[in-house]
Amino acid sequence: IWQLKTSNTHAWLTSITFQADGQQGWAAGDGGTILKTLDGGKSWQRQTSGTQTWLNSITFQADGQQGWAAGDGGTILNSIDGGKSWQAQLSGTQANLLNIMFNADDGQRGWATGNGGTILRTMDGGKSWQQQTSNTQAWLNSITFQTDGRRGWVAGEGGTIMRTMDSGESWQEQTSNTRAPLTSITSHTDGQRGWVAGWGGTILKTIDGFFA
Image (cartoon, rainbow, N blue to C red):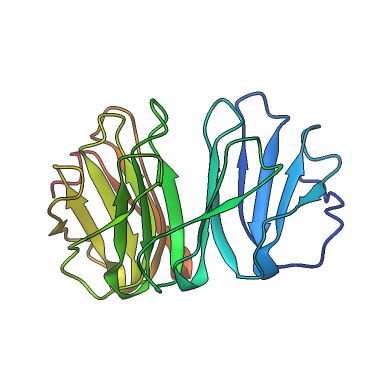
């Protein structure tokens, strides 16, 4: 059973994330909208993002203090106080960033993906971002990494799935057997099992670490 909650906004919300306790969470969307809840979504308060840009992705570390949001025009925002304040980071790109993630262990290693085959990486919590060579011009909608920060995968338009074994220094295209736009990818902690979702009811699964 799903219950509709009052968000106190009419913005298009594109991303949501929650802490392990299921109480503290954030949502982001158009017009620079960032919302926060402390009661499991019963009530939401708008945070000041400092931008009117469309935000496509939001993520927080387990401490509930350090977080990032990414959006159009190369926008990357960082908070170190649970979202009370947000500061812009220099991404070095004007691409629309569609997904952002950080390794859970240190909050230093992170990646963002976007249109035109854009993949960005940071090793210092977002103080600096470097563009990686993806060898594709596809819109890359989703990225996932193992906790070792070396093995990762991205998924995007035209059935694109790409893999890296070296933290994104190089990327190799995988055979997805579909041309459907792929919107979300996730991998199990064993590094072998993975799932991808996309348009037209597409769901893909691998059990061999995305090697096939």
